[in-house]
Image (cartoon, rainbow, N blue to C red; front, side, top):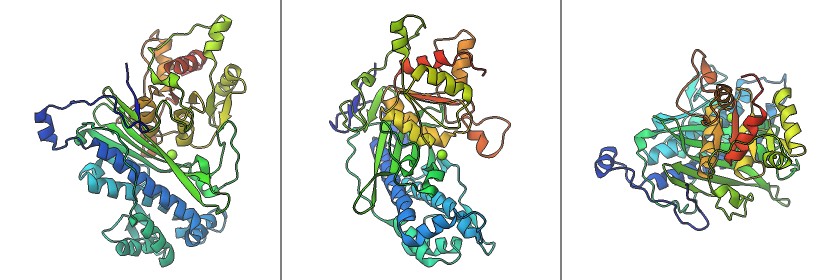
Length: 432
Ligand SMILES: [Mg+2]
């Protein structure tokens, strides 16, 4: 049985002494995990400011929209600006978290390399330097001498941000077990397109800046299970008068029997139902009676790239409760917030950095993220008891580049096991 607490009450579910005093001495790391989640939230807030600055500051926004004009890619720095925003955000997260937890920067992973080639053919490694001036100088090299843009970016990379106390309580996890997946700007297409006036349907935005998320997920290097995560939505709400955006962040920790989340059972934000506060044993629903069918009713968010077969099956089961949205991070957030029961994706085009952070939050709420095809395969082999959760430490064999870290078997993000079961029942016939 899992216990919960929320940020609003500031209570902690379980204070664990998971490490012996000897262990603690050997890791040199005591009671600092609450500082770790604070550091991740802090880094995500800074990253969100950079993401907003790139859209709001005139000198930077110009570079962003330039990129949209196909066929006008006259200079390399223009085509690279999107990637620069991505890489800078990733480097800020590495720099800030690494400063507070020395050594962890070596275990922070993401899609982007920090290597750049500028218009002059110079190879530059983007990083956050000691001082704002030094960072600006380095960035100006990538931006082919555009000092104004470089200064604005450097200012946001070095600014001081204050976040409120998260009230996580004491959590002991040895730091040398931790790896971090970062997706600096998930849904970059929506970010570049920058649509600000899209309207939500049942709280869900199918496209627009609301679908952009910054994802930081911590996992256990040995077991591959997610431990803590932050999902930051830099463009959550736009002020109708000033047109300025403000963001929102969500976090969760799930380790051993400790589960803490920024969304408490009585949270007003997102309507997390009290139903999700217990973790029921997996139920095996049988198709048949009207009551059973009622049991199997659920709502889902899908990618427009989902296969016709899976879309058809889900539409039959969910009726009007099917939604479409951009961004794996955002779709997962819709499950975290209780806007839908599940996010199903049968293709292999999401990656570890897309899933680790929302997975940790879902786990802290009693849910998870399952490997869709592995679950279906096990059921086809007659094993209905075990469902296979995504893990974050094992690359796909015999492939190169980003595909090594693809979620090969697709995924189901869920808050309640009964909804995972319903999805697996429904899709049990698809080829895996
Ligand atoms: Mg992504």
